[in-house]
Image (tube, rainbow, N blue to C red; front, side, top):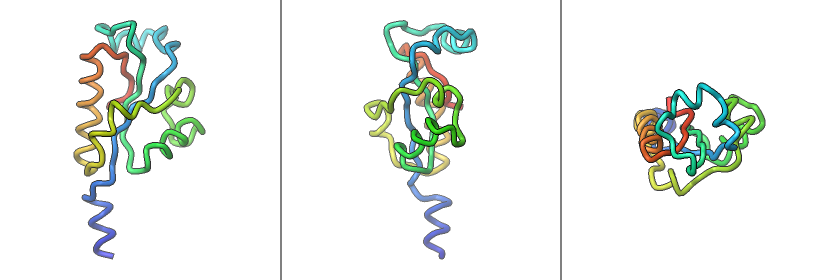
Length: 116
């Protein structure tokens, strides 16, 4: 039981992930306001974090289970090249990395949603 508590409290089983979104999201004013420096040649993405397998989390989004409406409606595919090298991590690390990754991608010209 001690092992399980340690694993779930501080274990490195959390991940950040990036989902490619349909470019239709670029039409929304909120998206424009969050991404004024975007490069229109780069894709729209959603950045999130999870304690599940990333593929399972993406399926949940697409099925509407505890989902971001952006990913549910406009999610196309995971973009592992943008996040796999960062995982796994602790919960605390993942919370910070989610925001850091979103800001890094935004600075690089991506249109970014999520990344609270």
